[in-house]
Length: 253
Ligand SMILES: CC(C)(COP(=O)(O)OP(=O)(O)OC[C@H]1O[C@@H](n2cnc3c(N)ncnc32)[C@H](O)[C@@H]1OP(=O)(O)O)[C@@H](O)C(=O)NCCC(=O)NCCS
Image 1 (tube, helix red, strand yellow):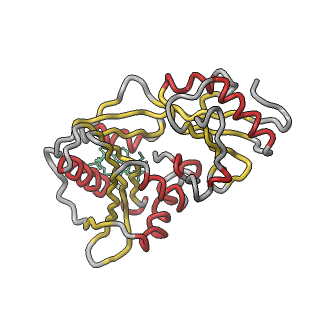
Image 2 (cartoon, protein in one colour):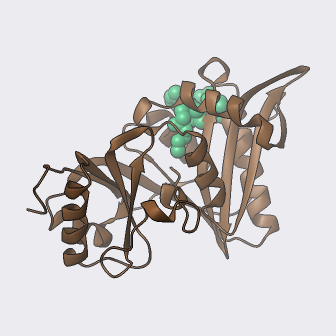
Image 3 (cartoon, helix red, strand yellow):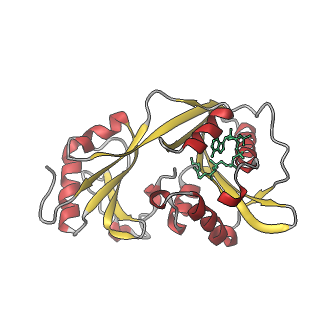
């Protein structure tokens, strides 16, 4: 899952990203829904007081609900102390960066994703993911920007230029992140997802990464099956997206 932390960048949409809680928390509308705030911890773990102030601010601005990024357990505490509850749990899986032992022999072409591919990529994304997790253009941009370097690959087949799948892989020093992976439902179970992950692993290895992480919804059995088959192992501590309602005129409970 990509982090939409950079959706409203400072300097570009600075007016929408007030410094809250000592500059630790930033808020932005959740995708198309202007009434749902996306709360992003900017650096480090915000204090419960910072989150309380943030919720008050959301109420003043007329937001109805707030969602967090995918948070590890220790980072959930200040939110849970302020009336947030688990909205969705995510598995966190990890794998050493080694090539696949038996890379797939599928008739799939992988090439660099270009800016002009984005509408088609978003269409694949929209067809592959349930509504809550679908990316829009800004969120795709965020996925590409979330790490210092990123690889954006699209999959096609034979002469047909239609994009059947795509992957965004990020790298920050020796860590790799499968930020996004989707295959159009009409092209699934043909090895395209595996080919995209194999490509990501090769790229990460080339740049010296030693571990790759991915998170996925707990009920996403297809993704978990794919990753486990490719040697990823579930980590004991998962992640969770938290949510709370925000009552107009009310603040943190
Ligand atoms: C997960 C996803 C990318 C897999 O892509 P794919 O091209 O169908 O995957 P592959 O064909 O390479 O599958 C390889 C193996 O993964 C497992 N797998 C894939 N989809 C599965 C499913 N629906 N049910 C059970 N196992 C599945 C199988 O072991 C499969 O091998 P097999 O077909 O020989 O049994 C695709 O289902 C998808 O886009 N899902 C929606 C978006 C998503 O969840 N993305 C990942 C989020 S982190």
